[in-house]
Length: 222
Length: 293
Image (tube, rainbow over all chains, first blue to last red; front, side, top):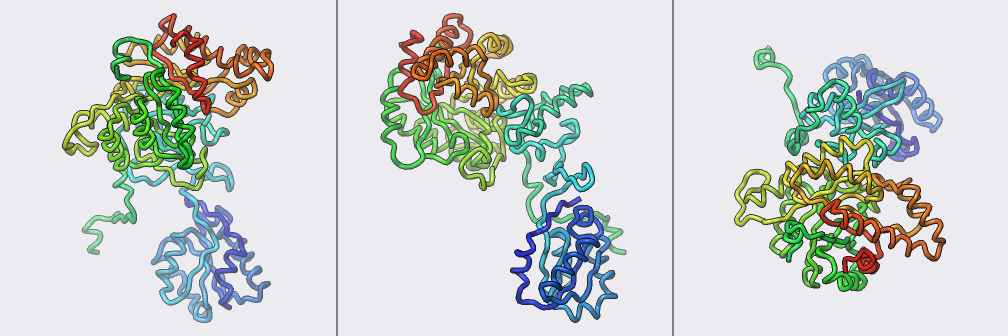
């Protein structure tokens, strides 16, 4: 999922101070789990804005805010409220915000969150970054632990000289990912994988902006 | 004799580190170069060491050449992508620089520009392969170079790291990638270092033990707590403590000299790399006490 963090309200307020009426869009997926775009947060922001003398014409929680067409359909019943709205505030990740920009080409769209990273939720509302979306997985060779993400230097061939009693040079309270990889490969009898020299990464696979068509030509025709 | 020839001839080699200053005032650095000229076999010129921005390593290597010192260009992957690294390798070569030490580099979070975007497009093992390729007339993409380099390329290793196995695997990769010599992270426990050397001797590479001069018991404790990969044994800390404030530095110089002498006399490794960290002027004293001058 995408980890998001609520922005300081005063920063959001500074951006929207010239507008009067607002429609709030949350998201049932990641932002709800992060506590940045679920029902409680929609209600909270509505209340805060109203305290500031602003009007909130409506609140709505998308099923999947980054899904452009689906969200557009879900928003149809809110037409009347939306017509009376100066500004849409999106309470999800940057993808959700940009879906709203596509759905509301004529309205200003503002965002209440900062978008952080692709996250694994390890415990309730605790998030770890484990994948960098680099476009080329090497997990099969590293015991399923991604050094591109877990190593601050993204090292592909083993630990740097800075590992300290098995901990990371950059974050001393975290175990060095290459020590973790070593221990795991040792446990599953795959240490030979660690001895392989990995070539420099092909970063052209993560050249931005990326696009993907996940359906076949035949399906596309339908 | 060049640094390469000295190491290859089996003579015990001595290198020392010179850190480029932060700013354009190079008087003190030139003074250090003068002190070291004719005494050491080559000088490592650090590359924005500890991720602190300073004069470029290549520029200072050129100054070293002009001032009669053979430079070892330290090159880290932190600040340049593969295009920048190769361009600098070619540039350094035509300026007369012949030794390069390939390193990944300390993370920007350790330095004085913490907001910087670290590069790490490639890392130490891959940089060694790049140098090896350029020595064979090819760039990293396989294009022909109009004139190859002829670098003597080295790398670093941390023999006192715990656990050691992942470090040894990486050491092997560096050997395979073309490293000809290694300078180690600080060595304080010579018995432990011998274990590493038993492993390293299986490969046809030269190993220079890293010597970091201890200034006081406080510095030793600080390094144990905050400098990754360094472990100063308690007996050395006790020795520094017993010397008292006034004699601590002198004792630190003695410890460095004693270790160097032992490494040389017992033929444990192929040379030493002295990191005096701001006390470059003390390097000749250490060398004298170690019987090298």
